Length: 304
Image: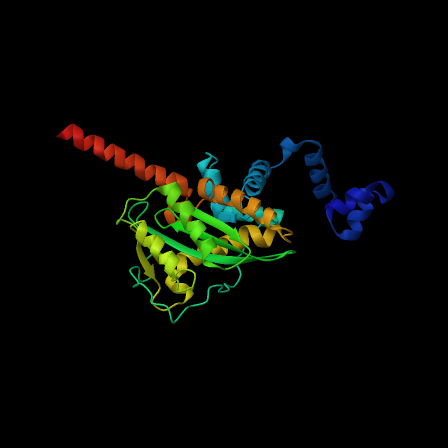
């Protein structure tokens, strides 16, 4: 009503409009005075205005995918003390919301005829250190040039993406390329790492299992062949689709998907806050582990 009076006050006058709208003129004049002098507004309104600018900045800086929880965590990491309910209220007022994941769709086809390694994970996706357990899976992306497939290799300790590849086909080569990238980047010690996947024909192929054996990695394959037996990899696929593919499409070319995926993976590893690891980015979680390990080794040497 106050905005209506602002628009028509010069034509009809404030008091006649308030009389028709059954509104006290003093209420409008108080509103007008606050517009002329923002310092007359309540402390809460002034504080909200400052917070809304920070919320908008954090939301846009993180691919516009953060909901109230992640925005609140990031603001507190920056030293902006604010209640979570306040962030939720202001985001609702601004029409901002986080990305929402849709129903998962399976892309891998189980190969029931191929011999499979044992399931050494049993749906327990937990690691006590980096390079102890990796999970792999791939998902699909629709483009104007046809379907693309994107494979990820994820280190379970901090949910860090250590290898990825985009391909036009679902052949074994492209999941092997993602594995090779992970091996090159991480250089894991032999016989201390387990690699887990579903029963997709690409992952139980002879070439893939032979490469794992050459690297001294213990293979593990879900015993039931459903998404729950590779739930962590499915979660990363879901975040990728919800935060990038579904929000930035339609996608025209393979090159555009590869560039966007490269940017998203870097943001995911170094910036995105993950609740399961304490509301910090994966790279920070791994850095904390190595720093604590180094400090422990130093103290051990000093004591001896």
